[in-house]
Image (cartoon, rainbow over all chains, first blue to last red; front, side):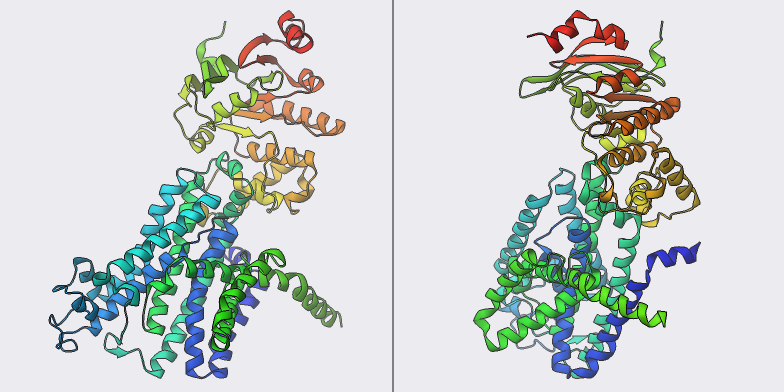
Length: 367
Length: 248
C-alpha cells in the first residue's frame, strides 16, 4: 500500500529529473564555477523558491499573484533583522550616539530599538517568523479575497497594489526599516562570519538542499488529491464548489504555501548576498518572479528552477555588458513566452526533447 | 394525502428579484421521495434560476427551501452538497485536464477539507466505487482518457456520474440530454430510471419526448411563476400551457 503510494508520488520521469537537477546543483555547478559565480548562482536559486511557489499557485491553481515580492521581502527582512541585530552589538556600534541599535536607526535619531525588532534577537524566533509571518500574511490576503470570490485579474492587481504599498511603507519608515538602502552590512550568524568564501560555499549548499527539499514538498502537493483539485478549480471552479468543497480554503492554502516558499527564498537571499532592500520586494521584482516561472513553464516544478537560473543568468550577462538593454530583453522575453511557447522551457522539453529521448532509449532497449 | 414529511424537498413562496425584476416569483414546489420531476417552460421562465436557488448559487430574496426539514437558503454551497443535494450544470462542467477516473475521484465523498485532500489516498474503496459508477454511466473503458477528449454526450454522463458518486438524495439536472444523439438520449433515460431507485431527481428539459419518457410529474414555469403542474398528460392538455406555448 505504502509502496504503491510512493510509486504514484514519484513517476520515473520525475525521479530522473530530480536526480539530474540535484547533480547539477550539488556537483556540476560547484565544480564548474569559482565562488564568486557560485554565490551569484546561489542568489539566482533563491528566486527559484518563489517561482516554485508560483508554479503551485498560478500554474496549478490559476491564482496569479503579482506580489510575491512581498513574501520574498518578509523572509528576507526577517533574516536581515536578526543578522543586523547581531552585527549591531554595543562593541561594534560604540561610536553611535546610541550604541547597540542598528546604524540606520541611529542616523534617524532613534534612541531605542522598536518593539517589533526585539524578538529578532533570537534565531529560533527568526526562523519561526520566516515560516509563520508569510503564512499569516498570505492567509489574511487570501481570506479577504477568496472568501469574497475575488479572483483572476482583480486578484493579480490587488497583490500588485499590496506590493507597491509594502515598498512605500518600507522606504518611508526609514528609521525602522533602513529605508531605500535596506538593511546592509550584515556580518555574522551566531558568530559565524557569512562573508567569507567558505561560508559562501556552505550557504550555497544549504540553499540548494533547501531548494531540493522544497521541490519534494511541491511534488507531494502536486501529486496529492489537493493538486488535482487545484487543476480542477482552474478548469471549472463551480463544479468543484458544487462537489462539496469550500473552494476559498484551498486557494488560501496554496497561496500560503507559495508565500512561505517565497519567504524561504528571501531569507536565503539575505544570507548569501548579505543585504535586503526594497528593490527586491516591489512591483518590478514581483513581475520578474512571474517571468521566471513563465519561462520555466508554469506547470513544471523543475522548469521553475531552470527558469529562475537561466533568466537571472541572462540578466547578469546582459547587465554586465549592456545594462540599458536588460529591461527590453525582459519585456521581449515575456512576450515571447506568452506568444510562442506558453508552456515555457518545460513545454519545449516535453514536446521536442522527451520524444527524442524516448525513441533513443526504446531503440537501445529493443536491441 | 401526503404529510409534509414525505416530501424530500419543500419549496414555499420562493422569490428572487434582480434589481426589481422577479426572475422567480412566489414559486412553491413539493418533491417526493424517488420522484422524477421535470420542470419545463419557455426561455427565461426561471427554470435554471430555481436550481441555482436550491443549490445556493443564488440567494433567495424571500421564501424557504427545506430539504428533509433542513432550511437550505442559509447554507453555503458546499454545505448544501454535504446535506445531500447534487447539481449538474447546463453546459457539461467537468475537469478537462484530468482523466475520467480523476474526475470521478474528486467527487468521492471523502477528503473534502484541505488536510483531508492532502492526505487522501486512493484505496480500494475509492477504486471500486469509481469503477461501479463508471460502468453505470457507460464510461468504464474510458477511465484513463483525458476528459477533454470525451464526446459531448459522454461529458454529460461524466458529470452525472460525478454527482452519483456523491450519492445525493436529491439530484438536479439542467438539460441532461442537450446535444445528445438519439441513442445517447435513450441510454440517458434508462440511466435516470435506474438511479432514481434511491433518490429524487429534478430535471430541466426542453425535449418533450424525453420528458414524456422519464417524468413522474411535470411543472410548467412561465415568467417566474408556476403555470401548471401534474402528469404529462394533464399538463399537455392544460389550456394555459397551450396558450403559452402555441398562442400569441
